View (cartoon, rainbow, N blue to C red):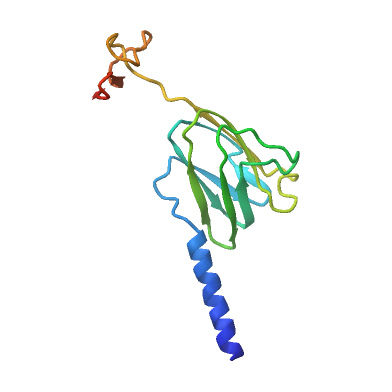
Length: 159
């Protein structure tokens, strides 16, 4: 009976790891997490791009809500977080996040003293540029040199 209980516990643990690990393929940017680091620790992206975090080793999370160091909200344009994932010997996808609002996003690892040891990061999300030099469009930009992103009052786009 003990053998069966140990086997079931191991199987359940394996299934939970598989359920918590996500697919990081096809993302725009990747950040590596390991012993007290995120690499890169600073990243600049555009609105609508997706970032994946890959755990190279250890037990880490991604906390974009409340700073472990100050106990205060990061004040990010939108809250994001990824649950704790363990990795040992092979990279594990912690998860992904698509950033839909421009601004500066700060985050840390809330496990133990990881943030205090330097496991913090920043993502600068820049607004996408609009290319529309058609004065009849509702998103007209006189500084634009093209009209590939024009939007008109009827909801259509000029592609």
